Structure formats: structure tokens, C-alpha cells
Image (tube, rainbow, N blue to C red; front, side):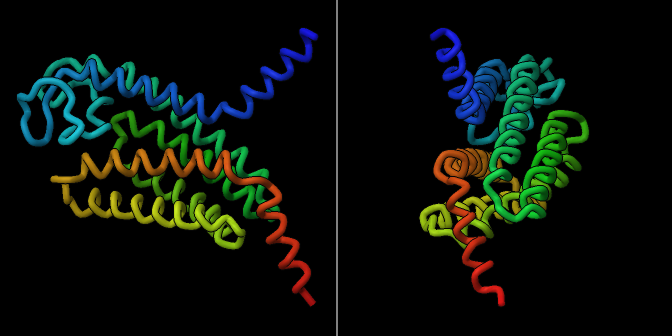
Length: 221
């Protein structure tokens, strides 16, 4: 009886590990905002964290924008560790649902590599790590989107499209120097990406994509 209970607990933990990791990450990042001393791109002398004017990356710096020691840094880096690990786990688990081995390996390994670089966003290599991790993340997500579009998961097709568009727009604003609304767009992108990842994690099955592969095989002469 005790063994069965432990087995069920392990199964539940494995099933919800991505969600639990994301929730823990978000909690740590929220705590980080509460410890942020102040200063933003609009007002260097402002007090505390502004969800409208501060970037998430402000939480990772050794010093806040106002020059004070950044007491949010420990919480923010801890949050980033759990977020990167959760996303890496998602890519590893989702790749098992893709019937094409080459595509599955790409989703898994490129996604996981992207999350390693994503964690390094919290270091002094921030700018280059944003470019590398975003590119790798989008490659994996694009491959996932291709398989979703071949399936019957119609509402997820829309979710994937919106997720990709939001991500591309955010990167365009970042690259073009359109900074006024970038802090808000960054958080919108952050939220839509998490929702998309969790939707793909919970509302897709291996069978959804095996059906696509079987249809393609049946059409092959």
C-alpha cells in the first residue's frame, strides 16, 4: 500500500514537474520585484520595481538602475534557474510525442541547449545570450508548430501562431531599439510563452501526431 502511494506520488510529480517548476520560478521572480531597490529607463530615481518601465533583466544586475546594490538579484537568478530547467524538461518530454526521430531530436536538444543559454541571460553576457537563446527556442517552437498544424488540434494552431508572432514582435522591438513599450511587451511575451508551453504540455498526446505520421505513410507509393 505504501509502495503504491509513493508510486502514485512520483507519477504525479513527473506529470506536473513542468508546471511546478514554472510556478516556483514565477514566485521567485515576483519576490525579486519586491526586493528591487529602484530606477527604470524612465526615471533613474524611482523607488521599487515598475512593471511598466522596468525590464525583467533589471532584476539580474549587480546594481539597480538607481545605483543601489541590487537585493533582488539572488531571487531573480534562482527564478531563472527553475524557469530554464522547466522549459528544458518540457522540450525533452514533448519530443517523445513527435513520431519523426530527426524532428524529435531537434526539438529536444536544440530546445534544451537554448535553455542553457537562456539561464546565461542573467549574467553579464545578457545581450548575446538573448539572441542565441531566442533563436534556439524559436527553432524548436517552430518545429513543434509544424506538427501541431498537421494535427487536428485547431485551437492550438491559433495559440502557436499568436505565440510566435508575439515573440517575433518582442524581438523586433528589442533589436530596433523601440524601448518605450518594450518592458510591457516583454512581460506579455513572457506570459503568452508560458501559457503556450503549458497548453502544449497538457493538451497534446503522442497519438495526436502519430495519426499525422500514419496518414503520410499511407500516401507514400
